[in-house]
Length: 116
Image (cartoon, rainbow, N blue to C red; front, side, top):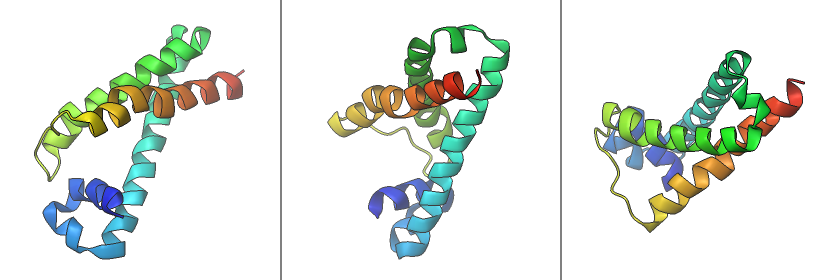
């Protein structure tokens, strides 16, 4: 629940952690909205940039890294949290490793196979 409350904290700030299941539900909604938005951006870009569908594995891994950087160094500082998270082992695993494999790659492979 605290992970989802952390996502909601981007909108609610620190009170999110006292919001219980309501703020966790908001965090889940925000998380999937952001993920869906990332997929839409990749799909639209793939209509103009052939590389994204010609090399879906490489494109997906790079896109996941871009999503990580944008979220952590642009979106989070502009959010209600107003901070860049400190790099630690948890962020390293979910960030530069996790985002390419669990965000970028599934998006690029879905676009590759569904847009044929």
